[in-house]
Length: 360
Image (cartoon, rainbow, N blue to C red; front, side, top):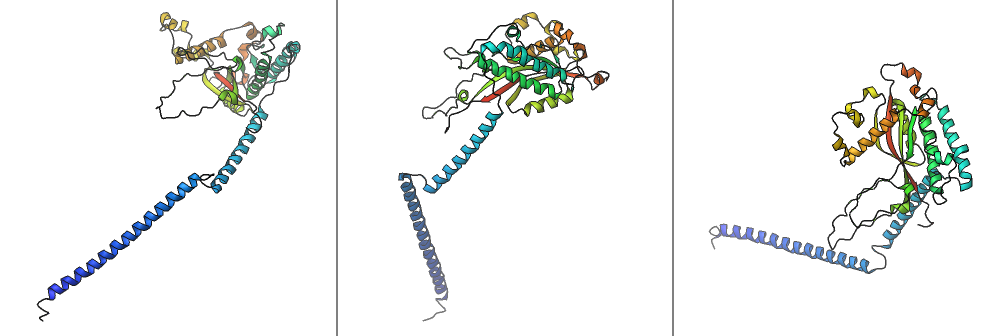
């Protein structure tokens, strides 16, 4: 047999045989890996089904870990809540017979004395534009209804504490400090106003509910009225710029939960006001018909700020008695720049946690 004649055929056949063997080995190995992978997937699926049918899902170890985390978070939440509750003002118990003496002999004298002795931002003490804080009727002998007495006591004690902080922070004049009346809301027909005590009522924005598909479950809502209550004050002061930052820091350090909103300020020197800050009767560009038309929210806020500015500049008998022209520090009044007062107006919201039952 002539091997040289068939040498090429033999070489090609040997190569094909080797390649075929490698391919067969690779295919068998791939099938084995695929079979093992399918077996692992089947095992995991069976394990998942077994765990899902069990009493504890996904496992007792995970359940114990989650329960431990929940207990830790609950303990920390309760500790934080107790700390907040401990810092909140607790109004003293009061009855109608003692209320008049409380206002005339305790509340107002303590605030006036603190204002008169506060010298950081005023040579002659902080000027009080309204020394009675709107309590003239109670000073004259009127008594509140028994039902409104707890809320009124809370408001008055908050007034005492916050005004003390304002005096210590270095304000020069307290123009206004009064509870803010709830804003009127425009509601769709058939929509009821949220039930809340007038004492703690604030502006709430009505928002249309988000659209939901039939298969979508509504998100759980938190009953905020069951967790906390709030009371809002409107505050207007004259204060120097450096003491203004001190005032904000002092309010932020108060143990009560205070939030400042609608903060507005301008130079207290009326001669430096731009035209848009002047009262409407002084601005020739403002049309009376336009001012009588419904205003937007921004326009209402600006109008309220202008009215507060106008009240601040309007002389009153009490202001004349307190020599309001000498508000501030004499050493700063002689400066040509850098010694001017700011007029600051803002809403101060006090949030109060409600005590909860044990175990909740």
